[in-house]
Amino acid sequence: MIPKRTKSSITSQFLFADGADVLHIILEGETDVRIASAFLQKSGIPLNRINFIVANGLSKIQEIIESLKSSKLEGEVAVLVDLDINNNYEAEHVARLNLHADESDISIFTAVPSIEAWLFADIESIRDKSKSNKRTYELLSRLPLPDDIPHPRHLAFSILRLKDAPEKFISEININIATSRSPSLRKFILGVESLLNVESKVGWEKEYVRTVGRDIFSKLVDEVTPPDAVIYKTLDGDKVTAKEMSKHIHDGTNIGLTYSVDVLRIARDMLARNSRK
Image (cartoon, rainbow, N blue to C red; front, side, top):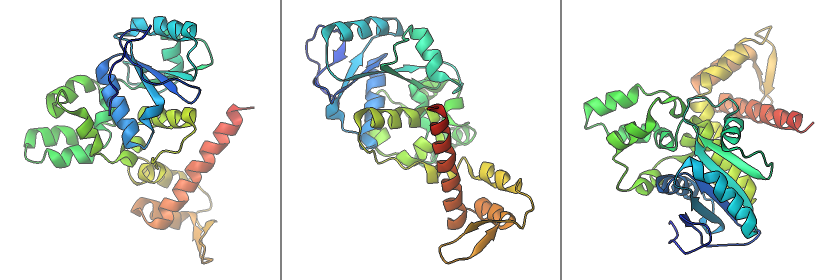
């Protein structure tokens, strides 16, 4: 549910709460607020602890950041902007430079290439709804991953007709599938979760392995030599070789899924530790 507008020293915003436990998120436009808040709500993030501030354009964001500082509002400040390019590499750093926001106390999130791309993150849900339209179904079947879609804004408004009710559309998606297929959406939701110190309903790892990552993990295990080396033991004591595990992953079995998720979590924790050194 989007809060009603109230008058404030900062214009063009949805400002309805203050306090140390509140997160102020600055966005480019009102459509961005509707989409972002719907995804957060779908993830189980408490919206009553978030102020959604509408900048009405990228150029106004820095001005609003300064206004927030001078008003001495409590709570964390974050920014969500469209990156406008199909590249997740150092996306937040690029956005920070574009915004001239070098302060470390402001979190920067990016929608790649724009926030409308997130609407295609659960592609199976959209395809199921479009089966009656053969042309649309075939077009959706050829789409790349959401963060790689060339012109998601045009596609969203021509195919999904989102002017009416983006919130209803987002409420019907599978958030785990969506966050597994869009790194920028995942970083935004998990980042807000961390800033608010809450636990969301998002569990993206298994869906990532089932969909995007199955071939990646299968090929990774194929590199293990010798192929008959034991790389996993089940709770029942059964031993699984690299060759057998590669097939488990490729076939999507529970053993293959569990192993891949474990590898993903270990890699993520190791990278996080290295970044803090």
